[in-house]
Structure formats: C-alpha cells, structure tokens
Amino acid sequence: MELRQLRYFTALAEELNFTRAAERLHISQPPLSAQIAQLEAELGVKLFDRNSRKVSLTDAGAAFLRDVRVIQARLKEATQRVQDIHSGLAGRIEIGLSGSHFLGPLPQCIGELAHAYPDIDVVLNEMAPNDQLDALREQRIDISISRQHVEDDLLRSEPLWPDPLWVALPQGHALGRQAVLTLDQLATERFIMLRRDTSKFAQQIYNACLQRGFTPNVIHAVSEVPAQLSLVSAGLGVAIVPGSTRRYRAQTLSFCPLEDIGIHTQVHAVVRKAHRKSAIDTVLQQLQSFSSAS
Image 1 (tube, helix red, strand yellow):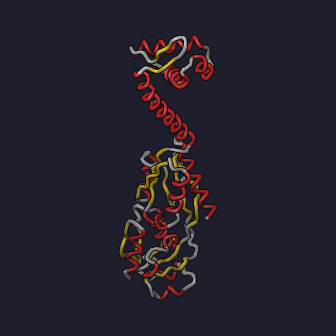
Image 2 (tube, rainbow, N blue to C red; image 1 turned 180 degrees about the vertical axis):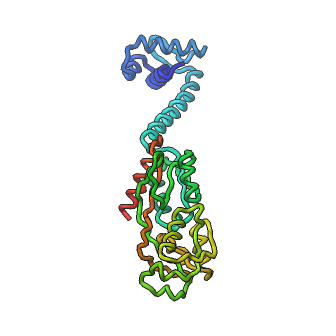
Image 3 (cartoon, helix red, strand yellow; image 1 turned 45 degrees about the horizontal axis):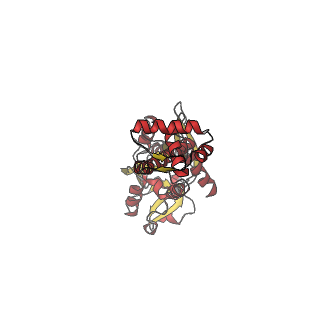
C-alpha cells in the first residue's frame, strides 16, 4: 500500500466522481481507476459501489476513510514537525547553568523563548561550572550558561550580557556605606567563597587577592552563590558575587559595587562548534536579542 493510493482514495471518497477526483489530483481517469482497483485488491474488500450513474462508499470504505484521514493528519503533523526541527523551530535543548543564573535575567529570557517558540523544549540542568563544560564536550548538554569565556578546538563562546562584580555584606556592615569598594578594603574580612575546584570564577577572585598582597581568609567554601549569600546574611563573612544576584535576600544584605579587578564578568552561552541541532542557533539568537533589548 502506498501513500499515493491513500491520497487517490481520499479524493475519490470526497468527490464520489472519478472525473472530478482525477481533475483534483491532476491526473487522467484511467490511472485513478487502476490505483483504486489495486488498493481494493490489496485490502481484499470493496471500497466503492459504482455504476454508470454514481459512485458511493461501501460501509467498509466509509470506515477506511475515517482511518485514512487520521493517518493523513498524523503524517501532516509529522511532516510539519520534522520541517520545524530542521528550521530550528522545534526540538529539545539541554541547558547547563549554575544556581546563580536563576537570580539574574535568564528566567525571564527562557520565559520569552517559551512564548516565542513553544515547540522548543528547554530543559535546565543545574550544574557546577566546570561540570557544565565536561557535559558539553560529552554532548550531554547543548548550551552552557557560563561566566567563563571558552574558545578551543571543540567549544566556542557567545557573549550575552555583562554581570559586574559586587560585594555582598551583612546588613549594617561598616563597608556598606561605601560608594565603591576596593579589593584592599576586604583584606581583613572573612570570605565566603565558591569552591575553587569547581569554579574558575572563584579561582580568579582568589588569585586577584593574592596579587593585591593578601591571602583571603576563606571560612566557608560552598558550591553555589545562593549558599554564599545565605551565609553572608547570617553575618558569617563577605562574598564577591555577580551583580545580577543582588535581589537575593535584599532585606538582610547590603551590596556595594567592586572596583574593576581585571576579572572577565560577561555571561556567555558556550556551545559546541560542530553542533547539529538547528534549535541551538534559535535559542542563541533569542538569548542575544534579549540581552540587547534589556
């Protein structure tokens, strides 16, 4: 049984006239009659009652028409979906990100993406920054939202939005009245830092302190920025964090901008150079257009 035969059958079932059905199909009447006869022979049932005056569906033909219409509708949906996937309008995209990005502009951007491209299924995977890059190389995720700029044989970075450094302080801390803080002013403070073995960002901050002539007094090393801010809120120390996280526990924290200490603070979308999903490019375009509009 061929799809062409089902198309011919549907046309004849709807027109109930060989001449009109053939005209609709842009073929002559003999090939239409031959295909219908072949279909009936293959099914072993009579689909049409026909004589010199009229053509009508048999009971079997009417039942077959209902099923064929379902098949054709599903086939049309499948055709549209595969075309959408090819065009980047549908598909499943796995995104790796750290918890701090939930406090910034990313959730709103993902919401706008879902509204603009409802057939792109975005899955968010909360992961440590270094683990994201491993997962990206191993093709377990498609995009990493990262503060690390990566450019190597396999991966490339697309800039999204700036996220300058701020200092999180317990409410009422003396330094909270400063317009801008320098790294030297933090030399005697207790630090709540991200774990340096999982975050290049944390290692860069640690190295910047060493370059200023002091070793930061790290009393707690945690995996995520929200954990840093919770401990700062409890009065246990200070933390250098991305400015986009300032909305977190704003009632129990003070935030001051930090001087430029030479650390790259741009947020990037990191992808494989040789990715094969068209929807990745669609998501990247949406992320970048959101960044330029905000």
